[in-house]
Length: 308
Picture 1 (cartoon, rainbow, N blue to C red):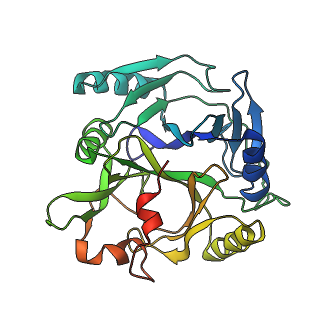
Picture 2: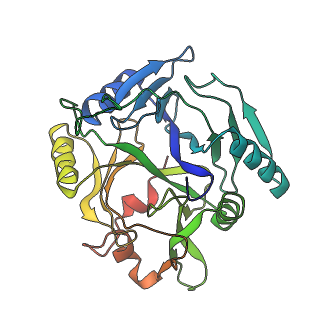
């Protein structure tokens, strides 16, 4: 049973500038598995240890960024309940029919106060992870590239993060895990929210423009795999923004880097377990550098300003 009716982040649709170049990057460098293409020209991928059909969808466009970020919920009853709850909260919803995304059931789509499009869904085809459900091996051999185990979370930039926080907590029961305060000591610059026992499932940063993507994150199993990912990025001449390093916030280890279209991605490992009875951690403005990049204890300009 989930900590709330929301199980986990389930998928993200990213805009890319060159589909052929992007598919090569996401398969050969990232090590994602291509699982399908639809009549709109979108390409679908999954991480090797994910059971559901896909977690990343690429759509060719004239600008990079994110179209929507989706969460899987427990079942259809929960999906229907959340749709009612959203309407009662005052949020307009839209039902997207089953099959609009490959192997995916009906989705409930809505917009949060930061301008981002969020989706909920209950059904997606179980395609397995390449191993048997009976007496499986430990892992799937010969996966190319970085080969993350799952799409983990997203960091979204927009104006009204207070409104987004209120919606996620009151409608879906998300918990506040950590926050960074602005210079006034009262206003949140950034918040990390979870629907599970992970350190975060979505994070938001206050920004002058709405509906911006800072990064989409992929989970690795160890610090050694984070270092291996850095080696592979260097071999493929991938543009690295920051890392390998550790966050103060969540205590996770990280590398930030860019796909060929300029979408920032992250490989992430670790982070502590969180439970709803735990008190949120607060970082003050004076220590924001250590909160984000614990080793350097300072931020770089590109990390703060480049979004898609």
